[in-house]
Length: 155
Image (cartoon, rainbow, N blue to C red):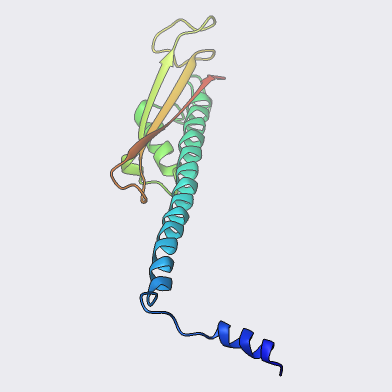
């Protein structure tokens, strides 16, 4: 091996100079801390998207549940109330704490429906849901995820 190659290899395996010991460990600690925080932030963002989509989807399911169970449906005891819609929506919210899921159901008049309690054919049913989402990365911040769906009662 020539002297130039020996010098190159020796420079790669050199001992750290005085004051350089532990620098690599400190650099790794700083870099890995930022990487881990970024990783948890990405995971939290994914959890937030899942929660938002679930809250919006169960609002739609609740409106459909109330829509097909109007006052004139032909099944045995198929009419529903706000508490029935709430129970159904909370049962469909997989991955969420059902006790924290708030459900509000309202029936309203429309052009073809103007008789109280507004649960007949042509009336409008609206189901609104809300859920408090708590971040892991930022533990002191809570965002309320909301969803709403409105449908016309078909029967």
